[in-house]
Length: 556
Image (cartoon, rainbow, N blue to C red):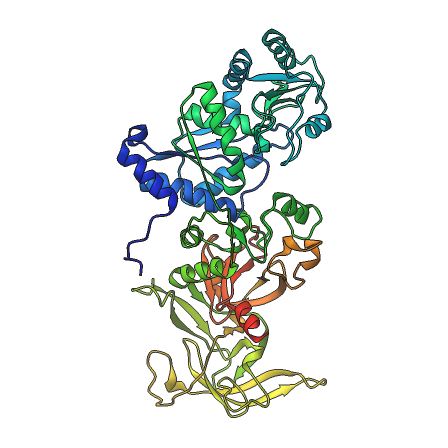
């Protein structure tokens, strides 16, 4: 399948046509324009992969431009986290730019519009402006300030800039068409007054451009050839084109694609902020969050996210993608790359009665059976006392139970075949210890016993075991579309996090590498939590070995 020619998406078709016609000299320059007012999520990842991917494919470049036009919500911390996320995903930008770099030029553009009779200063309140815009079926009414003279508008804009007026006292509006069926062309706002400290320009400005005025002009200043946005910007495009045409500047073009909607999650920045502020999750990088930092902490890899974005493609129609596809992509990646290790999450003791007490031996286990060379091996200590999973023993096993029960035999992974001879119970009737004998001739890799067993279980030697905390993460919401519910918080999955405070692992995992994926054999894929400490190691479950949600859905 991978060698098959992938059909072009509609943006690639446009770019190839532009290159063939020699438009912009065959040059391709895209941009990724985040607002530095929050953390990037999986929806932004789609946009990053698309913008940087298009430039890579066609020998072009991508600018990183921070849309920092709202001083009230922006923080330098967000700028740094956005840069880290893009680099982590595997992309490099051509230039790091800020809309605030262009504040002087944007102001000059506003002056030009006024001089050409295409903008005016309006003293109306925001409520008055909204009311005078009309409705989609009724034209708007002109503001009483719409016909101010050019000189008066220039003077007022200058006074706005110089701080003479309070917030909201005046705005600058474009003079376009109050009867236009597109509400965005009914004299839209270009500048508003905000006496607020800006994270880069300090207190130099107290007027700030609106997104619609800053966006297209910044594209044009940078000579962006293909400005790719999500579908909600379709009605904004006529204004984008109008401003570029009237200002007679480089003709950047806007193209729109469907944003990423994922089931069992929310993508709205406001809702994600609510989850953090109301303590439903630990932080923005909580491993249940759809943020890139949350996915990274959970153990997702850049390759799995890039693969996911490629698989979902670029569409012109809104749709909801199954989160199961994202989970499939990380399983596929980790199956090839994760080192296999043994960890016991719900322990019960197994004693091998015919293996000398106090003796031990070192066994060998390959790191990665999916790799051609196995990626080497590690040493695994073995003794007569082991931890195994409680679920791997049954006092009264059914016919097709191929693990341990009275008289049953099973292979211990990388070790020997053992046979259950007896078990101990406490006063409440709970099994506390399993007694087995082992077959010395059945050692893995050199088995001469001739005995065939159907089951293999994992284990950890009690005297050598490391103790760690394990966090079993699951989907944060119980319903497919939580955003459609009256209160999305009411659909939070109460089992989205299960903490196992004491799990036992083979000693090699005590030196686990941060950022590396491990398969806990038979249990799932895990990674060391980035907030682990040497005296308390914490492992996060990235994803289960199989899609358990699909199984439950089929049952229902």
